[in-house]
Image (cartoon, rainbow, N blue to C red; front, side, top):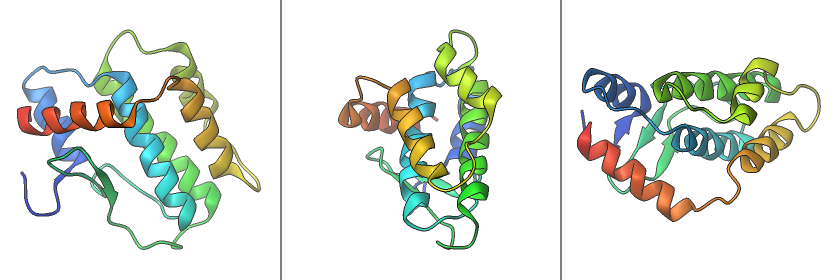
Length: 141
């Protein structure tokens, strides 16, 4: 599962599910935030198999930047968030559920608005702690 590029989010979620380990909803939202920030620099559709998590908890994407519209990229990030929240099970904050239910924002600046909504749901955001949790989850998975 692990290689030089890290573990895909898909592999991680599948492995953790098999071991009956839940993904904290905040960690799923953190991954979605990191992905949103990356696709804002070059919109692309992403799936759980395009997102890799390194042994140190860093999140990276393996998709061609600029290969989708901003709206398509935002919709794919919300889809990714939905997958992560399913892995969280119960106790998902209402703000994250609403974000998935409402779908991705559209129009100009949709990725910026999505990023802002994700950050708001994660206040206070401690990126170092989130990366440590992701790193531990990769080891457990």
